[in-house]
Image 1: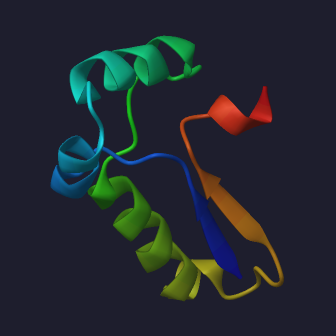
Image 2 (image 1 turned 45 degrees about the vertical axis):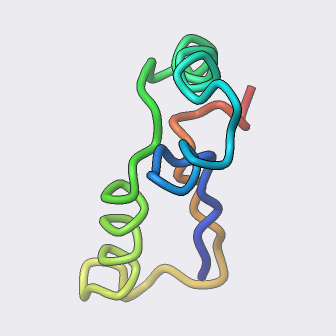
Length: 71
């Protein structure tokens, strides 16, 4: 199994981009869930995959992107 995270709002992302607030607003507006991915969203997906609740899930890639790449 694997995770396919979208662009996550992190301190490193903010430091690397010239206009992070504008970029984050754009992503939020284009994302079906109307919220940006945060590191905790990715961590929660990973915790699910290693939990007993996911014991029968095999060979999948979980998108953690708020639906933006499924459009």
